[in-house]
Length: 540
Ligand code: ADP
Image (cartoon, rainbow, N blue to C red):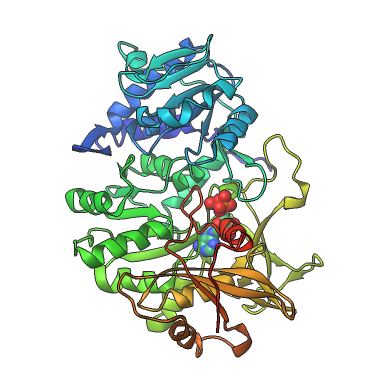
C-alpha cells in the first residue's frame, strides 16, 4: 500500500525560512575584542537572501562549491544557511591544516568562491595562487586590505556584496539527497578525505541534536559553539539552533580560556560544545581564577575520550554537567551520547556517563573482529566499531577507500565493546592501541587514569617498540606548575587500577601534549618525536 503522506523533501532552505521567521528574535552573538555583537535570526534570514543574490551574480550555480575560511561567527552562520539553500555546496576549510593540505582539499573540492575572515588573510594569501579553481575571494567585513589575489580572480568585501540587495530570495527546490555541505577529515593518516552531507542528512541530524535522548538542545537556549564550524560542521549546532530556536554564542577567534570565561560570565550561555582539551584548559584557568560558569546546564564533549576526572571536576567544582558523546566527521558527526538510563543512580550513573554512550535509533552499530566475525553486544567482546545510518557516509568524495567500508557499514577505526543495553565503551583507535605480548592495552584507559592524579595536567600514552613484548606503553606527562610528584609516584597511583603487566614502565615529562588541527592529542606527532629521540625516557 502506498502511504497517503506528503512526500516533501527535507532541505536547508526550510530550516533557513523557519528559523528566520518563527525564531526571528533568536540571536547569533559573535564575540569581538570589544564585547558581544548581536544579530537576530530575522536579520540572518534577510542577509542570507542578500548573500544568495550576490553569489548568483558571481556566477555560483548548480552544485558549485563555496568555501569558507572562517572562525565561528554570524557571517559563517549566514554562509552555512545560504550556500546549501541556494542549491550550491558549502565547503568548510580547516584553517589549521598545513598549507599543502589546504591546497589539496580546495583543489580536490574544486572551490569556486572562498569567503575568508580578514584575520585569516595571512594564512590564505600564500596558498591562494595554488588553488586553481578559485574565481572569487570574498573578505568578511568591509575591507580587503592585505590581500592580493592572482590575476583573473575577483576580490570583494562581504558587506559590499550584500549592500542594497533584495532581502528575499526564491530558494530553489533541491533534491533532498543532493550534496549540501562538505567537510574533509583532518587527515591524521594520509590525505584528508572529503565527506559530502546531504540536505536530508543534515536535517535529520539536526533533529537528533534537539532530542532529549541526545544533546537536548532546546528552544530559548543560548549555545556556546566552541567546536569550530570547520570541524565536522560545528557538530551540527548551527543548523539545529536555527531549527529549534536556540540562540548561538560564537567565540570567533577568542578561543583561549580567559575570553571563554569572560563570555560565559557576560552572556550566561546554558549549553556548550567543544573537545576535551578546551574544557581542560578552561578548568585549569578557573582553578587559578574562580569564575561562575554554572549558567551552563550541560556541555557536549566529544571528539576524543573525556577523562572522568574532568567530568567530576566540572560537576563538583562548577556545577556543570559534561555530556560525553562520540562521533566522526563521517557521521555528521553525532553518533552516541552518554545519557544514563533513568533508573541509574549514584556510581552506576557515573559509570554510564563515562562511556561513549548510546546510539540513537537511526544509527546502527556493530562490533567486528579481525576475521570479519560480528561480535555480541555483551559488554565484554571487543572489536572494531562499524556504524551505518541516514547521516553516516558510505563513501568518500572522489577517492576510492573501499577498505574503510564493509558494504554500507563504515569501519570507524575505533575499538571497543557495546553493553547489552547499548552503551559503547571505546578502548582505543585501532592505530593507537598497544599490543603487548599478544594482549591489548588501552592507551585511553591509561591516559584517563594518569589524568586522575591531582598533579597531572595532561597525559598521552603511545606504543613504543619492545624486544620482548613487541610494544609497551610510554606515558608522556605534563605536570602542574609546582608539582613535586615523581614518575614513580604516578606509577604507584596506577597500581590498584591495572593488572601488573599493563602498568607502564616507560615515562617521560613533556611541557605540553601536541594537538591536532582540531585540538586533539596528536599521537602521530608524539610517536615521531619518540622515534627522533626527542624524549628523555625514564624506565621504572
Ligand atoms: P579526525 O579523525 O580527523 O580526528 P574526527 O573528529 O572525525 O576527526 O575524529 C573522529 C574520531 O575521534 C573517532 O573515530 C574517535 O577515534 C575519536 N573520538 C570521537 N569522540 C570520541 C569519544 N567520545 N571518545 C573517544 N574517542 C572519540
